[in-house]
Length: 380
Ligand SMILES: Cc1cc2nc3c(=O)[nH]c(=O)nc-3n(C[C@H](O)[C@H](O)[C@H](O)COP(=O)(O)OP(=O)(O)OC[C@H]3O[C@@H](n4cnc5c(N)ncnc54)[C@H](O)[C@@H]3O)c2cc1C
Image (cartoon, rainbow, N blue to C red; front, side, top):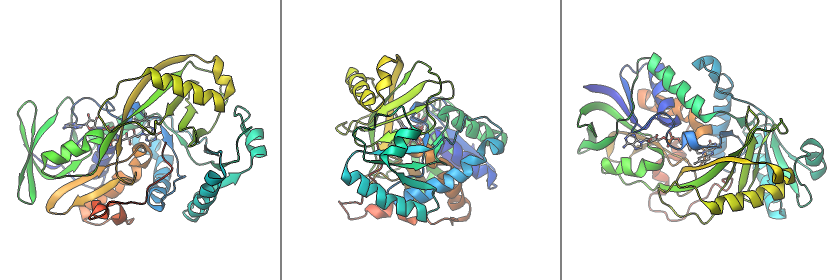
């Protein structure tokens, strides 16, 4: 069997690229997913969608994504629980305020309706927060959140309706390459599928997928833990991030609060075990910021992988020396929110060889011969 394009990975990135390839006219597209839709990082993620980034590249992609998210339910015919309740970033030190001030100028230049607001305004609008140590906050009303599993499924279903084949429980175990071309993939059940192009959307396993094609990429998996509480009456609109205590939290449509803590000392491994340490630290941090959480019950905890790149920005496009290999990897904790824009641009690149927005700064070439990078700091 032969496809024009094979995508490895049925998370949000693989599914959205499959949909956009078919939308842009590619005829035979297949996704190979070793488990099921959303079984990877996508189904484990926090669901946040924000445009408040420190790097102009992330910011531009996020702005484009929000424009696409705003009409996505209509386009895909699905209720994804997309909610533009805003995003509030808390600053607890003068250094953070200074960084926010710079970011806000850059973000406003990119068209993001973001404002730096004072402690009095935060206390008045968001009374659930303990503002005693707060210095300022950045607020963007068009940011928000979504149900990650629903939007992943919506893209996969739409791709399927457009003719794509979605092979679930089908692991790619070998990639056959002849000099500068990928010829085919071989699955765990020993079937061979030839392909015109190969797209690596392997999430936390992107480096392993690339290695099967003889390609080395600088992405590393890192566990991030997260939990959900019992449902509460609606008390908050925005998703909140606090880089100082390394936490984020939001209230879902049905009232539960989803929250995560990004351990700055977490090693790079594929471990996705939940830990007691996380429960303790998360509880300590959230109750500092939202004291009323002391009385709330946790219902469940889990973990997933961030696919980290050296500068915490995605790695998009081709690699030198392989003519028909593409990758959309290294999302470093923000792949869900960037997916609509990335998928449209990746499909343009694959179908026409050009993109309507310049993403060349995000190619793997930026790491060539360098050991130090300008790090995206706005990551929890
Ligand atoms: C706790 C947590 C919170 C997060 N919060 C947010 C957030 O609020 N907002 C946000 O934008 N992002 C968030 N993220 C990051 C986000 O989840 C990821 O960036 C995004 O889901 C990446 O999508 P993906 O499709 O690249 O990866 P995945 O969803 O992991 O999909 C990759 C798929 O590839 C499959 N695969 C791998 N190798 C093979 C193979 N050889 N053969 C077949 N299939 C294979 C895997 O099974 C997997 O399903 C969070 C992540 C975590 C862990």
